[in-house]
Image (tube, rainbow over all chains, first blue to last red; front, side, top):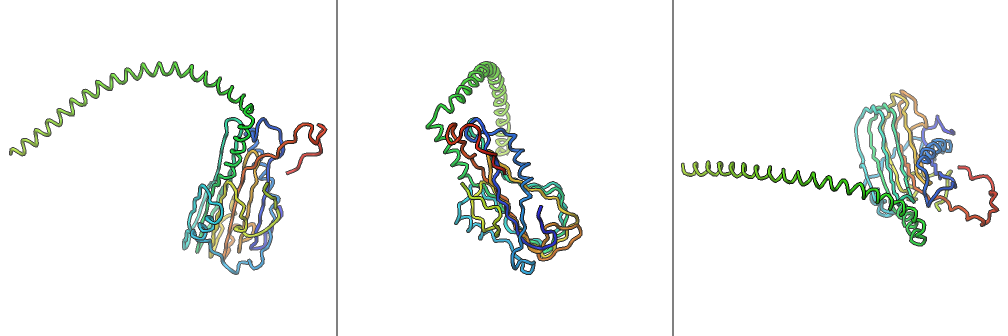
Amino acid sequence: MQQDDHGTGGSTRRRTRHGGRKRHKGPGLRPERELEAQVAEAEAEGTRTRPVERPGTEGAGRKVPRSREERSARASTTNDPDVYLDIPVVKVDEIELDVEDLAASVSLEADVLDLLRLKVGVDVELGHVGLTIKGVEAQALLKVQLDNVREIIARVLKTIDSNPQIIEHVVRGVGRSLEEVSEGTGEAVAGAGRGAGEAVAEAGQGAGRALEETAGAVGDVVGDFDEEDDG
Amino acid sequence: MRRRREDDVGEVDDVDDVYDVEIRASASAEELLFHEEPDVRTRARGTPERESLSVRERDGLPWRVRAGGVYRNVHVDYRLAAAVREPDPEPEPGQGDDGRGSGPPASG
């Protein structure tokens, strides 16, 4: 990995696209084990990191995080996210941190029958961090935007609409499953019906007894009040 | 399709592309003391395909900090984002392909 271990400042940007042209059964359908493979690919991709010195950032000027208002204003001028968790600026004079296995994760999943399975997420994990900070200002932001996923699903649905034969096998599979479920459900409903009947009868008896007891208790209380009033 | 610019460099907020999921964090400190080297892992994931972005800026802090090191006037910005992408359409059989393949697969 090409990294600068001595400089005190700079920036990196890494933009990657993962996933090759592989044959699969339907639009966007891919075995789930691909996920792990892509994660491993992502780790390997770390070699693309390229630190670059930015002029005038040698630690002389100290930045502060943008305020929530600034970030909100920025968000409203671009595409508004569907989920927006803004942890505002936190200011602490001094803090000692000893963190073990802290993770932040944002994930999005969407399925269309068995034809389309979309998953996307980002994770940040701190295995172990021990540090002391003075004069801290920090903030964090989590965002989820559904437009892209919505467009992909819309395209898939449009394709299905134009080519309904695509889901014939899915519907057949669902039909078989429903038959099996309905057979099992019939037995379960019959059993549940018998059980429910017995339960209702018992509940009715119990409720009747409870009402009798309650009425008796109310009568006693009212009787007490009557007696006090009389006194 | 979203353009790929793997080597361009800028500030975290310069990147206006919209991603499906995103984590951003920034922190400033007058003084920072690492008791030990931090163990930090980040990853982006997605299927069927994904495009991801990782941008980090740091002032007053080396790329690899050392245990016991004291750093002053530190500022760090970090952005990690990912978006799901559809696979490139496969060529129809017989269209521009003689069925024997057209070359090695694209490398990641």
